Length: 217
Image 1 (tube, rainbow, N blue to C red):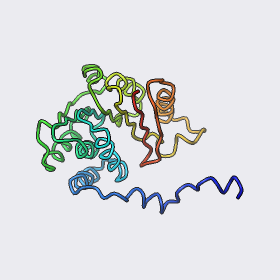
Image 2: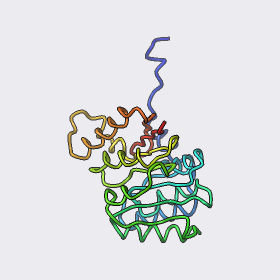
Image 3: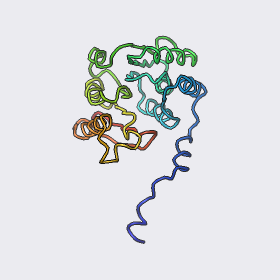
Image 4: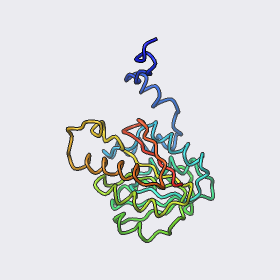
């Protein structure tokens, strides 16, 4: 057998779609996605939403921060993996996204003490949150501020906590060395900063438009 035959082939579009749709979303998350799409937003896909639920369940997350509310889709996915005593802090400068998130959370039967929606610029809000108090931080806001978000996440996370960076492959632009648009450059810088931070143990997954996961050691 040649060395080339030992290298697994990348999934073709059919296999990728099969994997992305493998776990059916709850009716509540599906409804939130449909509402977000109707509002002409671009919520995370099925595979990303399912993985967020799995991650909060896997690390037994009680305190979670999401940067960028995603009209409730990511928040509800995170909450579904947390126990009923957990609290999600969701930060977004766009009040219409937060209003949509509130509708999604309440429609799913989440109690008001399970989430807090903070309207404001994330870089103004994040420094006010407590050091080492969070189990997971989801980075999904303004792509041009990703480097600063990850820096704040490192401070906010407990040891053993996890940062999750959405859109880490920037819709296939990251792997194109000739692409130097602003968002692509910033996301590349974000990935580099995580790789170079000794406290982070990272992995990059081709889920959705790319998810980078890193544990704070």
